[in-house]
Length: 340
Image (cartoon, rainbow, N blue to C red; front, side, top):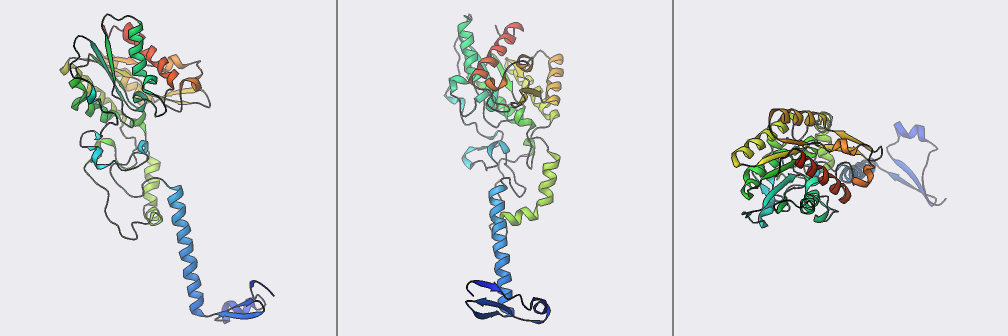
């Protein structure tokens, strides 16, 4: 007989009485002693653990222990030390310091927000809505040259937007700041809300063998991770989003510029439907009634449109979509006489 096979003839007697495992290999008998059986068991367990470790590393991409500075929008990667900032959490990718502070006799609008404002990574700067808005002002023959600065930063929430406005934006003497936040605010905070982040906190340096195993961390923190997913705490709670917007308005009054807020929304491209982040929307509408700020609602203009032509995914406008949004923003500014 060729090949390897278990001798099953006396299987019933083997299980309780025999101390050896008998194999047949090319007609010769080989037996595993008790030590051999234990060795085989250990090898099997090690192999199973290796498969489990590999599976977790391949399929489980989220952090497996409670840590600061983990954001889904940044693929949960730690922010490099050089990019960390105590107020902003991380510095914008495209810092606006190349823009001159003094605006001469021109008018200046600064657009703050997340990647909806900065523009999807597949788009050129000419395809973003701030660029399209400046182009419309030029075409309409505005009585002053209107400079529009795109100060959007991918992954930013209103918490970071407020800090950016307080720390840097106001220095550029805007006449108007347009804020478009909400997508990141409503996204899941993996461990800590934005306001609870500690930008100076660094990863755990415990490099023990156990803590270097993702499978071990997965098993150890499974129930904690399950609870985190179940609760789905947003990065910025609606009431904190409202507080951030109020503080932006307060800064605008102190520094002498006006504020406008775009209502956040998301889409289902397959069903060609648009949805509000309802709590954030209602808070913005109540803010408009209480103050003299402008709330720009893009959603009603999208009904009946083929949103697949206007958006790249569930939130990012395409170049054509940004042209469309810029037109809505311009008309609202003109209608409300918020920008002269």
